[in-house]
Length: 176
Image 1 (spheres, rainbow, N blue to C red):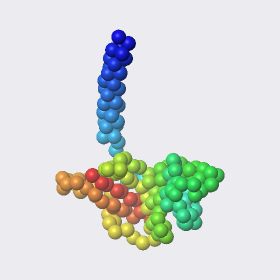
Image 2 (spheres, rainbow, N blue to C red):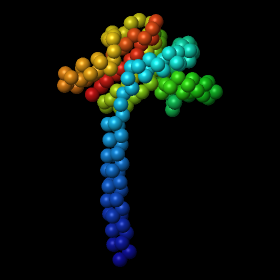
Image 3 (tube, one colour):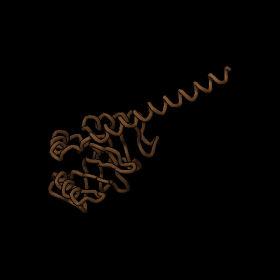
Image 4 (cartoon, rainbow, N blue to C red):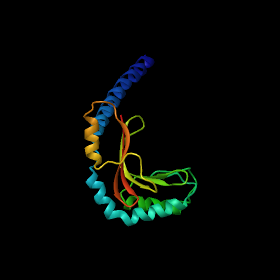
């Protein structure tokens, strides 16, 4: 008799768990559908308001020969920055409204993620790139380029850039 009650309880709680999980995932899905990529003008305004901090981050990050990525949760490779220095980077990233800074190799290109949604399988990211050489695909307006590409009614996968000033660009990654 005791086993029947526990079996019923396990089955019943399992059904409740599945229902709760389903509704949780449904809510997450709708929230992710309602996220809107910020327009170019928002990023440009932030860029000019935070340019001194961004320039400082470029200078400091170029000195970090072994560091590939720093965001608000981790550094890659892990354990390569002492805590005080990592906290300093985190503070600068927060002040500049940046989620992540990354650069590889000689760091001739340093990327700053301002906004991201998805991207493990599909998604979009928008931010800044400091590049010593002009990127491949430079457009006049990233928002208009996205709309133009979306009208083609095909899967999208691109990195597009918009020149801001000097070696600075807006960057938009789209991957369906």
